Length: 81
Image (cartoon, rainbow, N blue to C red; front, side, top):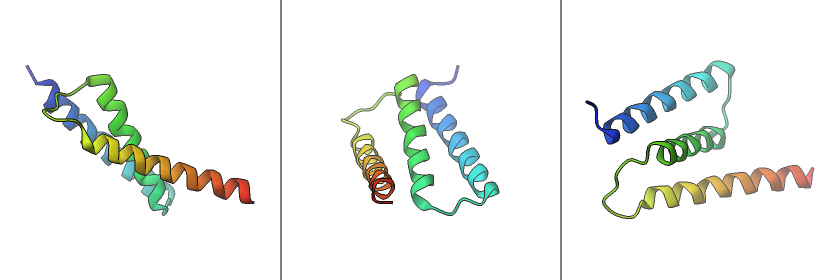
């Protein structure tokens, strides 16, 4: 039986690879789009599979802050135009 931690890491690698290939194939060049999708994939896998963490998940907090910064910049750009 495969452990939940190993399964979540494998699934995350597969999702990030598919996302990168998909965005590359449609010609997306904005880095914030890639990072935002990677953050969403990480958070979705973490919420659904709940892999075990020994300490507080600092990565999740940092990624959520980065995601919120990118989203707020996009909202600001839409409101200015």
